[in-house]
Amino acid sequence: MGGAVGGAGVGPPLPRPALQAALAAAVAAARLPAPDPAAPIRLPMPLLLGWRFARLVTACAPVLIVELLHEDGREAVWYLDQQLRYLGNAAVQLGGAPMLHLRRLCETLFETLADRVIMAPALPAGGELDWFLGCARATRTDLLEFHLAGSPLRPPPAHLWLLTAPPPSPPLCHAAPTPRGRVVLEPEHARAACAAPLRDELFRLLRTGRMRWTSPVDGRRFEAEGRPLYIDNLCFAYRVRDPLHDLTWYVIASAAYFRTFALFVPSANLVVAESQAAFDEVRFYAPDAGAMLLRHAARFGPTLLPALLAPPGEVVHAFRGRDAILLGHFVWQDLSGICAMIDAVPPERLPRCLVFETGLEPEIYGPLDEIFPELEGRVERIPASFNDSIDRLYRERLTVIKSTAIRVPAEVGTRIFAALRRPPPAAALIPPPPPPPTPPPRNCY
Image: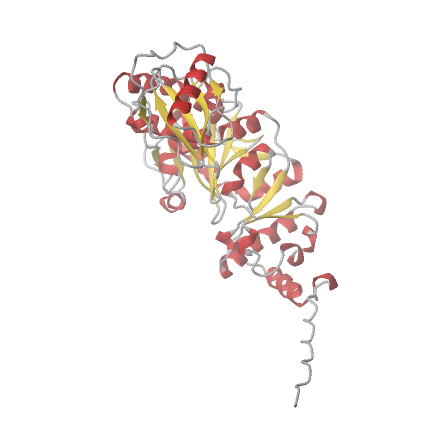
């Protein structure tokens, strides 16, 4: 099945006849049946100023998708039938045979996306995913929302398993399907997996390049990659695969304390939390974790999938932007976490520190590399936000970690005051303004 063909390129907006001709040429290039010249053409109004026809996606034929691009980077889509008649600017507006055709196609498409991207190990795209990941982001997200809105195969809300203490009698277990059959998740092993200190494993990653995880099936500790999916600046989901049982799960960590708050097992659509309080920390993410991961894979798939297929790259530390501009949180979460990282990791293994949203001046107690001289030459300041940098993080295969703490050691205060008392370098001194010119004497005559 065809994928997509190029559009009109950069240029002035196309009036309706020219747009119709460009679409007809794209249909011919895709070797689809030509529109009936006698059929009435129903296109929207001519493209407004700044918009241009980018390309035509033909992989969903007989439903055609027109991708539009604005000069400021915004994207939009139109849906047409093969007679180039306008059906809507969102898939949910379709009805009748086009809607049923698109729904069947999306069910297969997103099942494949989940199998190849969300489950481990990741697999090359191939087939349906090639054209989908090549589409504009607006197309990918619109098709996914159409699928989630009405498909009977939509991932339902996850089942929540709270590991309350003491456990119920008899102990409550859950089964999870794997390619090798079902495995049983035991409550004491699941509790150990939830209680494993994530920050210690992040420090181990810096020291040795590997992390250790606890299996919720048998409780054993094993070494494996924990490939993070950057849901947003406040939530990472570390994908873990137990090779013995062929079970994939996600460790959901929140940026408030950045420790394990819940596990998500995709094959069982199961969220496991140690307590209600732990679950509440990720209540905006975990209840619909299946759809959350599917949205993330659809949105960032073109950069995420190649990153998952390649070996992990450099480990870097992310310093929050606008979320860190709080006097207390900055000290007891961020600076204390960096202090703990410096104490636990050899100097030669310390990571680069990425500071986001530098226009907001988030380093409110002074530059990080002045408070922590060990980071000199390792701080990269980025004007963009973390969320706007996610594609870059995947493209460069960066493994991002966050070290936070809930206790403030005295050393942090000592370092802050030392940095504040340190005289600035001579190059940073601002010379005083020149004196104003002497006014000429007044004419007394």
